[in-house]
Image 1 (cartoon, rainbow, N blue to C red):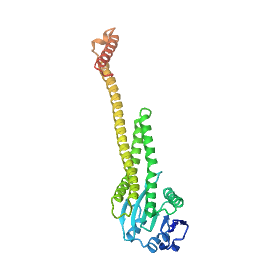
Image 2 (tube, rainbow, N blue to C red; image 1 turned 180 degrees about the vertical axis):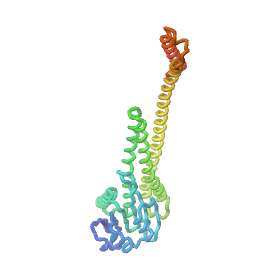
Image 3 (tube, rainbow, N blue to C red; image 1 turned 90 degrees about the vertical axis):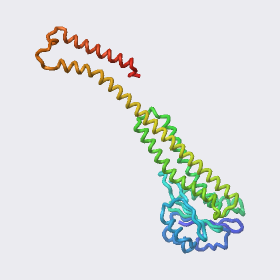
Image 4 (cartoon, one colour; image 1 turned 90 degrees about the horizontal axis):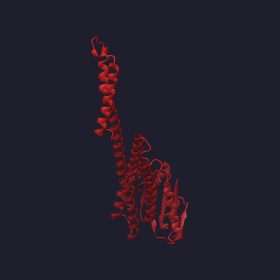
Length: 319
């Protein structure tokens, strides 16, 4: 699907025009959005706009790393949107010049629809709006970055819950949840960090055609990305601390179990020795002829058990 937005020299916005009918010179600038385009529609990138073949190839072969390339008739941006369900990156490509903005994406994205409506409302509310294609590109980037926050906030809430339920679930379940959170944080990091690097390059590039005010807005996006990366690093450190705590807790529980089993085994060792000795089938065993031999052995076992327990307690084994 292709949708068009053409802004006249008088500051009025026209939508729904056929791309083949648009003459660039008749308008101040245009925005053409390729959403889930067909092969025939994609061919217009070459036949109508005459973009560089390498840029068109990058549009066709997803998923490229976020980047900025400079061509003769346009600047080419590769951006990453975030799939809120899978946390996987989805590519959005922008071609930017003084007279047009062309966006290209294989998935239908709410961020693009929101940016489209916002730009249209800005033009309607302020006749002669001079933002142009650069401001529209900023709006797209801003919407993409804003969609990163809800997923990260959701993970932070989950981490807070994991901290509070540490004693209510088994260590195996908690460890599984911690590693799941770390995996999702890694997915977010793979999307956000390259976007941060791209925004830094945009801010420090002499080729990007933007004035001082526009750079302030791009700087705001960069600040958001810095905040997101800091949040990710803090959350990763928190998951590492939780993982270490759970491992230590599990180790302490195991040590406690082993201590208990060791005490029990140690107590029964002399008792087993006595029972083994008197269980031997020798004819000549003086104690076997003694009338009180059975009770004496039982008493010896009780004394040994009580004495060993008292000694273990005094030695601090039960602490």
